[in-house]
Length: 120
Image (cartoon, rainbow, N blue to C red; front, side, top):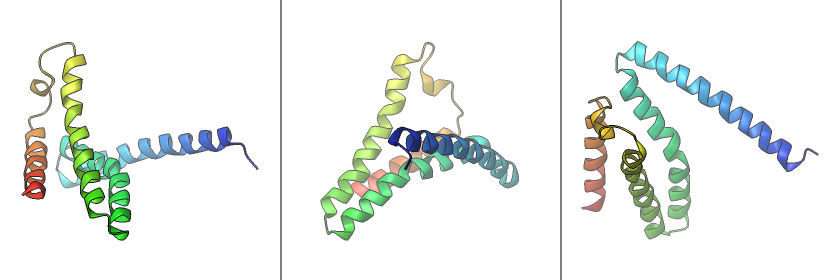
């Protein structure tokens, strides 16, 4: 039976290979749909990084821990919204949001609207 380190190494290699393939597929989808790599990257990243929260929230709902489910989703959202803030602190240059694609305004507006609906 393989040791834990070998299992970890195998899992890490699978994740790296899958991430590379996912980026290639997202790039191809962006070309096919005409949505652009910025928007496609945002969608793919949102889906991939939110799957753990989704599974955990669904598990919480299944055991009728509704406050936990909402807390998981909002907590992840709060944490994700701090990433640009801390990125800006460590970025050596103008404000980081001034040098990224303006298409991210759409992503930000969607996040703000959905969070507002959740809170309301």
